Length: 334
Image (cartoon, rainbow, N blue to C red):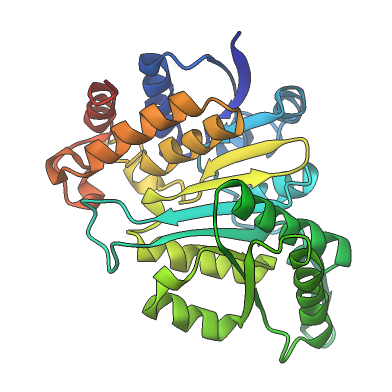
């Protein structure tokens, strides 16, 4: 039986890279049926809401979605579409695997780190105040015991399920006393349930330095929302950039998988976009759906393609456009 999946095509290069995923899935015979909807600028320009009700209903019904990059209009009153979706569906786990790819020119060739970022709390909770008289703004970083426990548990569960040996908890407890204490206490409490997995902790600024010096020392990383936002891009830089890494937003009932790079409107429609990040996000989605054979098949085809510089897109120094790259991945499926 086919699994119905919501496909949010996105803005800018979104339609082009989602077509790449659809073509590869079709060639591999993946039993997925797409229900296409949209959000962001494309929806707004059609007279719809930034997040249309049809999209909300589709995600609630299907429980799984794949999302291209979305543009949030710059201006007063528009909240980030990505942040709204995470809050709307309580997608508290932002999961970002960052692994070196043979053939891709990067600073390190042996990075294999998975970052768990708490996705609904902290400074991104949207608790902001502005005082016109004083021209002063307050942003409140709300961190809860419940939120900390569940994201730390998710990181340890992942480590156990995928035979990872160490979880590093990242914080700023030396300055942010209460927020740091809640998160550190959650780590200490949960780690007792996983005696087979080592836990250590790092202060965020030191962690940034450690990652650019010795990224191979880190296995699974778990942290709060803002720190996770920063570290996830840093880790992507270690393996070649945002165009190569997958992203997942996972809750207890619903999961949305996404390319984490921007919509790149300056190259939209020019056959220049690199679909790797979205394809790899789709591979994560297949694993989530327990379609591991298809995930492995497409992952192997991707790695074989990327290993040859002549089979890469221009951003990776290759000569191929989006459609040619996609066809090469398809050719490498067998």
